[in-house]
Image (cartoon, rainbow, N blue to C red):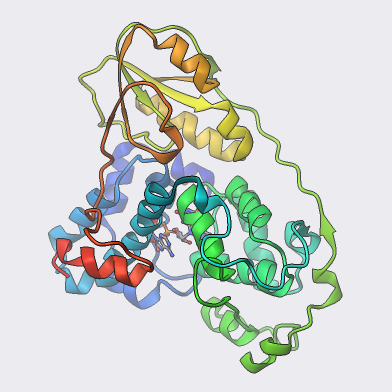
Length: 365
Ligand SMILES: Cc1cc2nc3c(=O)[nH]c(=O)nc-3n(C[C@H](O)[C@H](O)[C@H](O)COP(=O)(O)OP(=O)(O)OC[C@H]3O[C@@H](n4cnc5c(N)ncnc54)[C@H](O)[C@@H]3O)c2cc1C
């Protein structure tokens, strides 16, 4: 595996720009499903609104044709599909969306997942990497979610909260809806993978594991005992910044998902506000808060935390501008639209394919 360290993400805007220019959509297309594939590791920057999907796509399309960039533009579409779903369905995304989850045995995490001890070697090393670095490849996330929900019979909500806590790119729409997609509450069926699939895409050769079974065997699958042992998980966090203070005059009010240093540089006072009630609901690791502090400082923003009620009182006499984000609907100020790659579809959509069919021509696909 080649997951980068935290320092890779505490970089300058110039370094980030250079990485964007290096994206090779052809190599991405051929290799993205392999754990050592040519993926971008740009998702922490996208999740925190440091760069946008539109900026990424435009950069790739400057040097590559839409057709050879198809897979990359398609994956950016998944991110926007999840966020459009959040915009439309609001808090409903945090509960089973379409179907109730089948075969649930427990709402608690399997202890072997928390302790990186599932006996599937590559998954255990991906979990260890997640905990130490805050990153996990997409395919490893799929295997992890399949084992946790569809084999150990865990309801997806607690595992999603656990993964979101550890990830540097933990994104409420992408994470929540991906867990639901794997566990069949936002898709037609539960996703499973066997040892052969894991070996192929991780280029490993583990034999004789409890997952070394043909796909037909999943119909009668009985989980090994160690998958059924449960544990409670605690999420420790210390919010950075200071308690909310009063501001007057023009204020650019940012949330932690909007840390683009280029935004509204015409305004002198920039605040990054952390909603303490939201942060308690969706806690984040120390590494993640370090990442946020770094990018808030590159935005020359004051980092403050408190309740939204306190924020409203503190900005009562300020002229506030912010951007739209589903978690911040009750924040003060005039909301500007986020920077999207694809427009909102004109017709309703019930699946990613229905969504993408309506928007893909926007980038020449
Ligand atoms: C269980 C589970 C949980 C996930 N949780 C998150 C999360 O919290 N935050 C998050 O950003 N993504 C999440 N994903 C989607 C995907 O795993 C990550 O976006 C991807 O691994 C990020 O790595 P990258 O930047 O190298 O992606 P690349 O492959 O380089 O792709 C570029 C960008 O496209 C978008 N993208 C790529 N694949 C997907 C996908 N399958 N779904 C949605 N967007 C995609 C991301 O914004 C990504 O940064 C999750 C997937 C699963 C299965």
